[in-house]
Image (tube, rainbow, N blue to C red; front, top):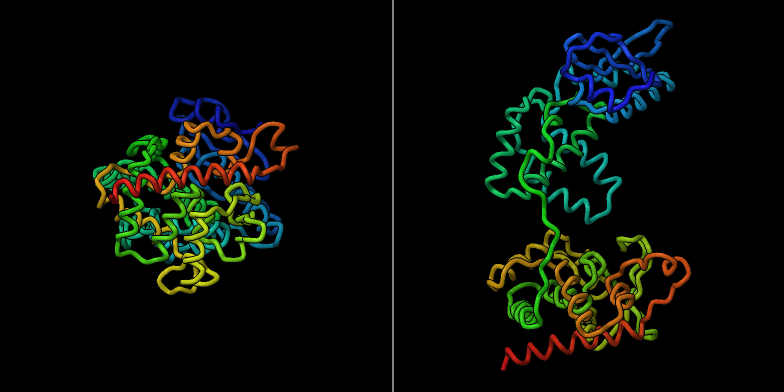
Length: 393
C-alpha cells in the first residue's frame, strides 16, 4: 500500500487501530503507534540480513523529504555502502550546529548549483543573519520553542525579512537533512505562515519629477562612478539589475546599434536585444573610458560589482531623498506605466523589459522591434531630462 500525504494527515495525532507498519516503495515505510505517532523508516538488506533505519517523525519530516532521503540511501546500498554510515557518520561524536549546517549548504549547493545573484542574495540574508543562531548548540537539539522565540525577535526587527529568513533556512535545513548531514530537526515544524508577513507585490510607480530627483541625487552623491553610471542606466533602460551590472563592452554593438544580453545573464535564459540610444550611449562610453571591458566594476576594479554593493548604494540614495521607498526594480514598473500612458504598444514595452511574449507570438514571432524600442527609450529619456532641467533651473 502506497503512503500518501492525505493518509498521513488523516492519521497523525489521532487514535489509530490499523496496521502498525505501512510500506511505500524502495524500502520506505512508516510505523504508526495507537496514539497516531508516525515515524518514517528505511528497510534494506545488508550482508544477507534485514535492517531498519529510522528517518524521523512526521510532520517534522515530510513524505517528500523521506522519499528523497530513501533515494539517496538506496543509491548507497546499490554502490555497496552501508547506509547506516551515511545516516550516522561522525555525527555521533559531533553534531552540526546551525552555522555548520549553513556552511555545508553554501559550499555544496549554493556555490555549486546557483547563479551568482542568487548566491549573493542568500549570503546577504539567511547566511548573514542566521549563522550566529544558537552558537555552539547542535541544530538537532534545538526545540521548536526556541526557534519561535528567535523568529519572534526577527519579527520585531523586520516582519517581512523574518518570514524570508525562515523560508530560506527551512530550504537549507531540508537540503542538509536529505543529504544525511543532519537528522530531522524541529525547525521544520515551524511554517512560514506562522512567522512575520508575506512580502507584498511591489506597487511603487515613480513620477518623472521623482525620477529627476533620484537622477540628480545620484549625480551629486559621493558614490563611485561605477555605481552612479549603473543606476542611471538602470533608470533609462529599466533592465534587470544583473543584466546591466554584469555587462561587458563586447555586448554593445554600435555598428548594429544593439545591446545583446547573453542567455546566461538573462532571467528567461534567452537572449535579450535592446537598442543603443543617445542618452544611454553617452553613459556607456563614459563607463568604457573609465573602466574598460568590465563596465560596472566593484572596489577591486577587476570584476563586476556585487548585487549587495549596488543595493547598498541605492539604499543610501533612497534614505537621503525622503520621497518614500523604492528599489531598482521599481524603475521597470515605472517605465512600463509611463510609456503605456504615452501610447507605446504593449508588445514593445514587453521587449524593452526583457519579457517573453505569450501565446503564439512566443513561438513564431522572433522580431525584437528594435526601432520601436529605440523611439520609446528616447521619448522616455527626453521626459526625464526635461524634468531634470526644470529642477536644476
